[in-house]
Image 1 (tube, one colour):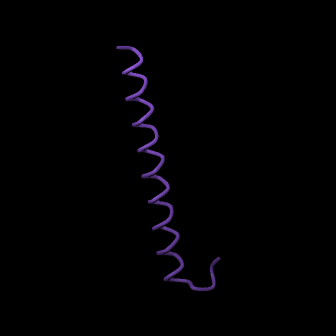
Image 2: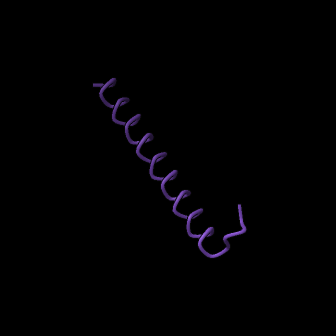
Length: 39
């Protein structure tokens, strides 16, 4: 039961990290659209 809980927490953390990465990427793309010279 504890290991199942830990696995669930691990999955949640992974999902959060993926979400953050997606948010950062879309943010970067939005910035690039507004300022094409910004790299």
